[in-house]
Length: 208
Image (cartoon, rainbow, N blue to C red; front, side):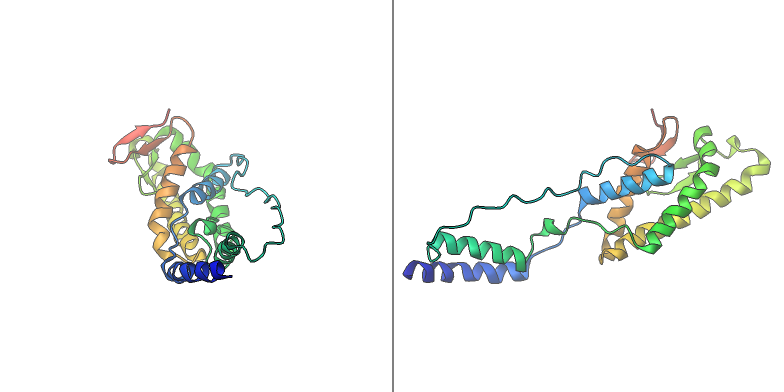
């Protein structure tokens, strides 16, 4: 019993510290998976298998009747601590299923048939900040230029709104810049060969 009391006294400061110092970090891996799913839906690609599923936990072995043993008490403490103060990585799922997010995704997907010929010709390119721009106006027939400018403006409006909505839906508006950077990578990595994009220095590169 003396050991149990001593252990509790030693672990109590850890409990109090954990309760006040836990931080929530940007879930980069989950964000990348979510971005890829949305971008693939917009581009009309078949999404890959979701690998963000957590396998079912294997039931543990029931402790023996030594419930008062210090090791057993430590295990109980750790389990209780994790239940009350989840580790930062436990909140790694990203909510991208709100009505606003779904509506923006559908709007962009509907626009892709009109945009793809201009991606292919190099008239429109992907910028490093997760948007698109008219890269080569000369590749667009004069009669189509206003239409292309409007397509680009509408697409950028939806993309900007999407990044903000995802950050807001997850209760972290400060994540918007990281979400934007994640999508910027995903738009390029899921694009077709031959499309143009800006590298990290702002130089135009043709995807191969």
